[in-house]
Amino acid sequence: MIELLITMLERLGIIVMIAFILTRFSFFRHLITSNQLNRKQQLIAVLFFGVFGIVGTYSGLTFSTSSSEFSLWATDINTDEAIANFRVIGVVLAGLLGGYKVGIGAGLIAGVHRFFLGGYTAFPCGIASILAGYFAGLFRKDNQRPPLTKALIIGAAAEAVQMLLILLLARPFSQALDLIEMIALPMIIANGLGCALFLLIIKNVVYQEDKIGASQTQLSLRIADQTLVYLRKGLNASSAQAVCQILHSETQTIAVSITNKTNILAHVGMASDHHQQKSPIQTQVTRDVIRDGQLVIAKNQMIHCSHPDCPLGAAVIAPLKQRGETIGTLKFYFHSAKEISPLSIELISGLSALLSSQLEIANADHAYKLAQEAEITALQAQISPHFLFNSLNTITSLIRIDPGKARKLLVSLSHFLRQNLSATTESSITFEQELRHMKAYLTIEETRFNDKFTVIYDIDENCLMEKLPPLTLQPIVENAIKHGIYPLDRACTLTIRINRWRDKIYVTVEDTGKGMDRETADLIKHSHVPSETGSGLAMHNINRRLTLMFGADAALQIESEPNQGTSVRFAIPIMEDR
Image 1: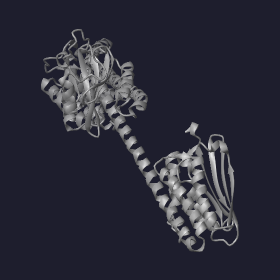
Image 2: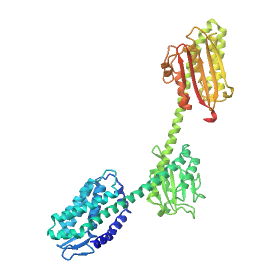
Image 3: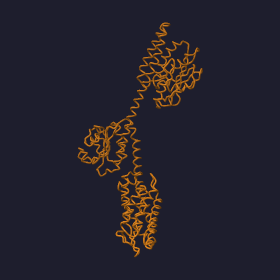
Image 4: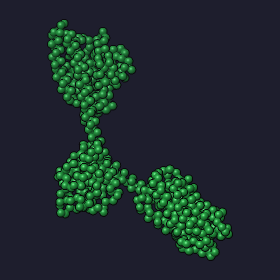
């Protein structure tokens, strides 16, 4: 028995060697790494593991119960002979990896083959093969591969069931009993170990695939992190040169090139003396990639370099796309086509998709900035007529009762409008300009509401050259006068503070006027709150522009209590820290 066990363990090396060779083939790697198999894949798996079960049968040892001798290879089986074999390995693994359907299919192939080989154990061995595939499939869990200990136990158990069936079904019983006493323990041990070893090889293949995938992912993420800052500026000679430098240092290629539709934007690596920036595209294969949008492997005869000593023998050319249109190519060069592996092709394909995505992001980012600028301009244009209509109403009321004041107001309004028109064409102005603008407005209001309010200024002169969105202070001051001060019969105070604290400039417009409840104060900066004397746009638009330009921290902060006045504050980062 010990001699048989040693012989079977030696013979098991053949099965393990076959398994290792099989894992080198791509179809088998795909088969064992797929978590879910479609019908075609299941059929392939059935055929594969069924044939593997047949190989396990032939690689076994023929045992004669009459002579108690073993022959080295199982070929022709006499009526008094049985086979100590490894058939269970293929069938059990079919069930564990593919499920009970694949296990039954592989068991049928291996079992029927064993039945027609003959011998007094043919029928129980055939039945045992089918049962082994079925029960192994029941232990399979979706998206999980079984641990080695489970494979060992199931393989050993499947062989033990086969021994039991031989005792129950094989005749004469005495021969079956002699056979079991001789081969049961070696076969149980050998087949259990065989299933575990086969699964270990499979796990090693999967581990290597995962390791390569993780390495590629890490490389892609590292490249993405380095290239994004350049491609945000779009695809041009400067960004292409920087990206090619990064790709050349990170990948195992002799040269990297990026083109647009007509010219070479950058070339880094070998042959840079004659593959130069801004020179026109020379090869037809590159034009084909731009036209078709498909990756191409170009061998030496397809490159057609005019330089006699060009070391570039082959290339992988991938398209760079934006909104589905090919806008250029990404080229990786090699000494010869033999250096181009499937792994290299997969990596280059992924990098072209990555860079294309970054170009899409750059395009979207540019469009977003344009939309922001357009929205800011539109918001500024909304505020300008808001003040104009109120000013004209004031002047109209003064023309009859005080023409002198009306003339003074017209001069102030003319000065205000001149600044107002220039402000709507700019994204930001200095505090000094904004204060001049606001004071022109206050001149009009003080003329209209004589002795109605007093203005107090607390201005840090060091802040005057810092910038903010135009038409920011005047609408806040206008709201304070119109909605806070004007409705009251008493004189009020309007205080304007502009001070710097650490890395920000803090602006406060405070009045001692009518005030409002907290709900209105919270609502006024987030939506339009129409009133009898206005459209409700001003404060909402100011808040919108501040947050668009400086972020959420620059939003308006409004504090107010009925009959206690209102304070409107905001803070913006100073220019050197933006």
